[in-house]
Length: 497
Image (tube, rainbow, N blue to C red; front, side, top):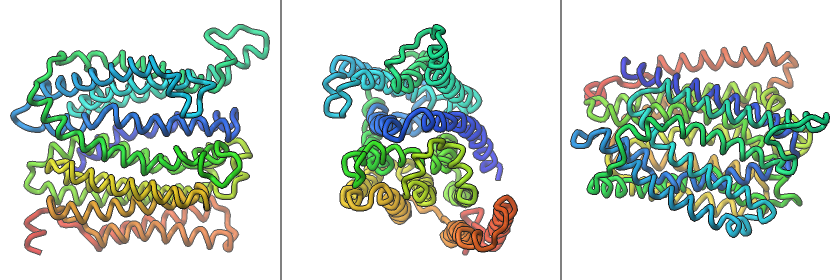
């Protein structure tokens, strides 16, 4: 329990910064949806979906490769870090030069020939974030969650303040005949991207001590090993991003609706509600990845991972139930413009995507098997299969059913990933996950949601009374499952059983 408490403590620290940071960032969603119509917000959703793909390519698994080789006795943290950072420094520099030279040409096929500056700004955002990736990984490896969290929160704070200035305060000053420094009304939507760029630049500057901590000398043999380990992770990452964002990339081209960017804007806005689950999953990943590597020599490591899975699914199930009980109120807080609610499928995607993210989190946790056993190639094969399914199903179904089909495809593919990853992983690194317990936890969450959905209108009781009662019932169910379906705590117990 001591090791689990340590992981929980670090997850909480990362989680507070992630949740608080994302919550503050969420405050931008009401701003964007109030200032911009779904068509314009569709541009923001589109560009950030494209950026997600390139983030994976530019970091090409160096963070996980760093964690893997830093844990091995023959490699020091410093040597592993400098080798990994040297790799990123070279590739990012090449990307920045090429992107700065050819951004206008790149903008044409993406549909932004009228605003090629968007592409230039994002070339630099991507480059700065790529250079920040390994310094942030070093903070996690050295178990410095406080500094990690402060810097992440600072990025959010700078980004939010600049957005508020450029989208609200500066236009107000200009409208009243005053001077607004550094403001050009013609840039408009572009200030969302400029705010991001400035925030990323400030954070990289503050990470310079980590960048320079061990110098820049790379070990040539270790470089080869790290790249060999990492390259399959590119496909895993790209496949994961394809599962998450491919629908947003192609939606504007395939949707049966007349205005593709309007459809994309509605989808992107309601997609944000499912990010409540993603907040916890991301915090868990920040803490769990170095933690899992550090515990691999523990004789009861597999059982420890199984127990962690229990708690992980419990928290995800609670997030699902809580979000769906109060989804209308959360939507009203985040999505301000009434035109977003005119689409009949907007809010329907929220429970589907929440459950999809739960399965994605399970997949991430189970993925410890190929990371610890250096089977990243096998992990990449599974992810590529899932990505192919995502692409094919979205291409087939979006023209008929719109973005609602994308939500169901996301759920189906993530569930497939979780199950297939478990079955394959048990052959190489068996972990005694308590499958009946995990199934009951997910089933309980779906049951409470289903009962509340159908019974609340019939009972005609204030939601502020009935929904807390549903949460109490859910809590009682969690207690019953936890006590009646206990997960073994040692390998000895598991083997004897």
